Image (cartoon, rainbow, N blue to C red):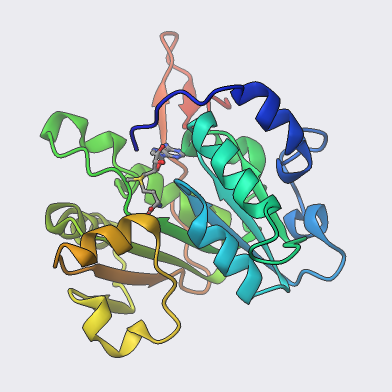
Length: 241
Ligand SMILES: C[S@@+](CC[C@H](N)C(=O)[O-])C[C@H]1O[C@@H](n2cnc3c(N)ncnc32)[C@H](O)[C@@H]1O
């Protein structure tokens, strides 16, 4: 998402500090408790953009602890201001994380997330950039490690190339999505769908929205993604050895 530099960005971010995840006890062993004593499940959105989806989801599901991650600080300012505006109510169950998906292992303990939302992730269409796609198998392996048994990934995109790529990546892990639709808005799965900013814009242009859900099977395990340091040690996606 291209974003013009926000005026007084730091001051505006500081004003919404309580909307941001505090760095006191990371990685979170019990993320729900970081948000409220009553929260009974943990939702994580990656690439929250302007935050409309996060605010509406947190409003609709007050007993879920909702974490919305966005790497662009100016977007996080917009997200946090939106959450604070009162338009969606108080939203005590919503926190934003100004960080990148590569650092997820430093933030959440394994098995602590119940649902992961990926909405209109950047498609990175050039083949050489495939590893940057948020549905590349190395990210999927990371998400599947973060999810609890029976946890779920929900992915929406207008981009057919990225959708096909994602189906192949899922299949490479030996998994099959529960739901696949190439036209979400005309499907039975549209009931209760919360539209994102990109989704609204693409569907107003007449584009179809693809959606899939992937459940982590009971007992499923996949190795965390890693590469190698110069001295041959494994380095996990977040730099943890
Ligand atoms: C195309 S926008 C979609 C925004 C929003 N989800 C929507 O549907 O309207 C993708 C967003 O993902 C964010 N993003 C991309 N890569 C990311 C990463 N590795 N970690 C966190 N956020 C990321 C971008 O900064 C951008 O705001």
